[in-house]
Amino acid sequence: MVLNVLKLSVAGAGALLVAAWPTLAQAGGSQDVVEASNREDVAPLGMPRVEHREPEYAGMVAQDPVSVDPEVASDELAGEDLALEDLGLSGLAFEAGATTGMAQDLMPLMPGLIAAESVVETVPAPNQVAQVRPSTDGEEWEYVLSPYLFVPFSVRSELTIGGVTRSVSAGLGDLFSLDRIFSGALRFEARQPKYGFFADASHVFVREGQGVTGFPLPPAVAGVIAAQAGVPIPPGTPLDANITGTGRTTTVSLGGYYRVVDQVLGAGTASASNYPRLMVDPYLGARLVALNSSLDFDVAIAGANRTARLSDSTVLFKPMIGTQVGLELSDQWALGLRGDLSGLAIGADDSFAWSLWAGARYRFSPSWALQLGYQYKDSNYRLGQGATRFSIDQTQQGIWTGLDIRL
Picture (spheres, helix red, strand yellow):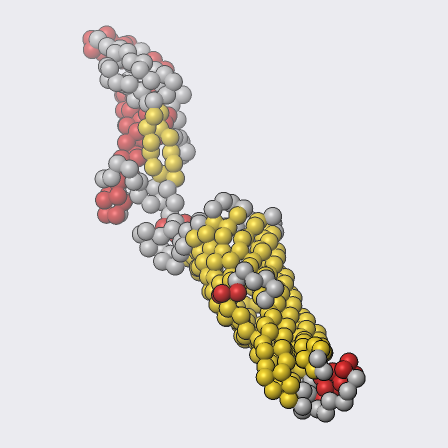
């Protein structure tokens, strides 16, 4: 009989210990856990958040526990061995791994107590709060097409052809004069989270005509005018002329970049999120530049207008190096900065160019974004000397506006 009583005591103590274990575990935690658990809507970091919701059987009321007559129980204990099955504790497990739910199921319910079930939701640990927003899983490519238009604040080109130098300029007032100035670009990118490739093509066209009094005709122009007029015209003869300068520059850039910085600023703080996110991408590549310039002379001589043209063109191939920096502020807004240098052109006595672009992007859908930025660009090219010299010095600044389209 004593052995059976001991079995009964051990069984009851084990059931109570398993049922009370979550409360004991929480009571033994750190002070931070205790303070965090006082809030009803926040669970301690690294601990499960318990959310109570009513099960399908909610509202069922447990029956009153069965009453046992002490005298009858005493007689049974005195008369025969008492088994766990007789008390309804069959199947009770105290082995390692027994769940709290099993112990709770075995606990008697007070009259009127409504059963409920618990749903466990894991709260991320602190080092999981501020993670970089994954753009892909590291295997998929993302493709972006970006068409742009240039709104000029100022474009100035100094053209030298056959020893004759003229300046051509345009500005914001010529925005809708497409016969005087036009500039556009198209950029394509194929990228993954850590690296990518790009192709960028742009075209700048600028034209300006000027009337000049007493312009000394250069030898090449004097010869053409004399042949048309049928009279000899010595080089350097001063004549009134209208001179129209035209410059065309087409640039194609190819390169690749590697992301050296991808950092969420403020990561690890209590208010950490995926933003702001800083990205730095150095890039290398090559640039192909096609230059085409012309000077048109309209001279009145011998009672008629005579025309002549000086023109030259070349194609340059030169290396390029640059860096682009991005700062994502949210899912919609981002800031960008890009700058590059190119030079050491093959087939030129002197060639150097640099550019700087700064702007902002607003994404109004998953596939479409609007970009607006300011660009300053300076380039020069020189080949030959004297009457055979061909050169272009050009500066341009203005607003680039365009779209980013995810394909």
